[in-house]
Image (cartoon, rainbow, N blue to C red; front, side):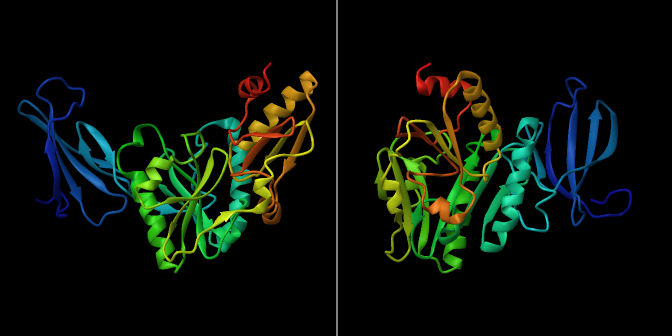
Length: 318
């Protein structure tokens, strides 16, 4: 079949869809190949009347199902060339986190030349994996020739569609291609916010190779070499009784969290010590497990959970 301009079209899907014109409304969908952005010819009919229209479709929309555009597995990697124009998934539309996005992009600009990878689905959603060579990863984990996964996140309506599987498999394949000894990630015995679920990672051959309390270092080794937590992690305590937070700038949510906690502590007379982890050396020497954020209170390590005012009240018992 050809369109009005004689361009060959490939019939992609024919089905009844609800286009808002009542019962009997139908459409035939045809895709014009080799056109970017892709264009769909939509033949819409009601009774004996039919019309043909064209819809410009983004690069990740390829087919219709139950009247809705279904997203394809169109992934992209953030590079120095596209960093400024691409969103970073975590804080797409929330204005209060935009300063965090700016800080994150500034941090990434220095990390990408070191081998830092941020791979995401080309959609407006939280579907991404972020990883880097372990030697250059801002976490208190040591090991030779490993990849460290900072974050694996698939949320909302994108869950259950195989995106996490695709992202993990990409990372593992990339590590093998680079001749790495394996891949590792921070997890926990029980599921926790902001950490990848242990049960999911075990499906891909990851094993517990080190632990401190309820937190675990998981690794998939290709050659028997294993990573481990830094010696500093075993301290798990500090001398100060003040509320103490170690924080980085990698996560876009952190600047807003710091602002909320700082304001609340000032208003309520709570001693607060904010420690910026702003170098690789500092990150490797944090006195607890750390993945951008770590909280101590009364000398004891409490959580990796990002704090807002409500969570802080609960934690300190107010």
